[in-house]
Length: 179
Image (cartoon, rainbow, N blue to C red; front, side, top):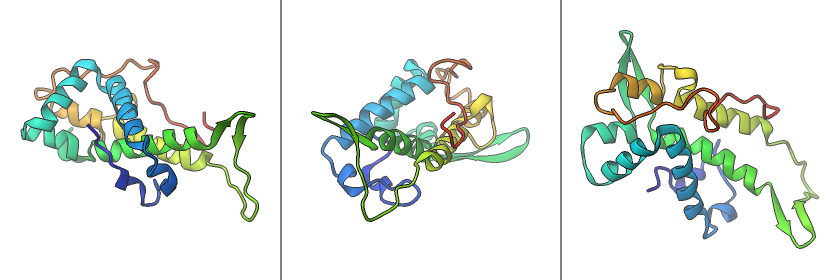
C-alpha cells in the first residue's frame, strides 16, 4: 500500500526528475521503502494492523491516522499532518541520495553538467529530513507529530511501539553536513 503516490513528487520542494519518477521500478521502490521505514517506526504489529485495516475498514481511527487530524495535548489543539505528508520528505531524501550517482561497468559515476552549475543536495536533504523527523515526533515530542497524535489517542492504537532512542531506525535531526 502506498501512502505516497508518484504525483506527490511533481511539486517543489519534493519534486523529482520526471525520468526518475516515470521509471518502472519507482513505484515498487516506494512500496519497499515505505514498508521498511513504517515497520521500523511503528513496530511490526502496528504496521500489520494499519495495512490490514486502513485499506479495508472505513473506521475513523484509521482515516485520521492516514489523512491527519486534530488532537489535544495539555489542553492545546495540535494537528497531525498524516502519513503522506510525513513520508513524502523521507522518500524524497532517500530517492535523491540513491540516484545522485549510478553504477556502470567502469565504476560509480556522477553525472557531469557542462552548461550549468551543480549545487549540493545537502541543505535540501537536511531540510526535508527534518520535516520528516519532526512530523514523526523526535524524542517523543507530542506537538504536531505522529507520536503526539497516537499518545493522545492511545486507546485506539494499543499496538504502537515507539522505537528506543538510539535504535537503528530512530530518526534524528540532520544538519546541512548530513550529521
